[in-house]
Length: 112
Ligand SMILES: [Zn+2]
Image 1 (spheres, protein in one colour):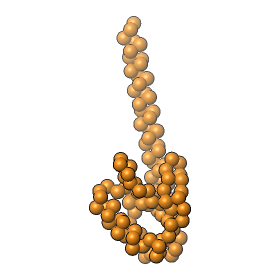
Image 2 (image 1 turned 30 degrees about the vertical axis):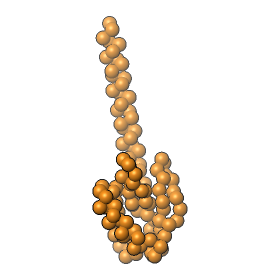
Image 3 (image 1 turned 90 degrees about the vertical axis):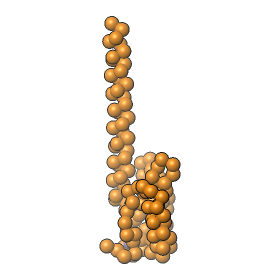
Image 4 (image 1 turned 45 degrees about the horizontal axis):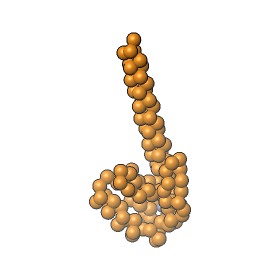
């Protein structure tokens, strides 16, 4: 593994202390071995893209706010996470539709 890169990935920042820990590492590596490239967008997700100047690994960073926990991942893992999250969202959406549909059927039936 590349020494200049970040030691670990964060699927989400579970606790404030985890975010602090990340911040410390971020401060020590940013502008030295890892550089900001651009603000990126993927599906409905926006994030900051960072690149390791040693191995060219791209890292995606999404800041946490309110109920969004954020993440800091290698590009391919970030894409997988976003794909998974959106698929999960779709499942919930369709699940709700089915329930509403069944309720309506039940209502209609109760009138006859
Ligand atoms: Zn690297």
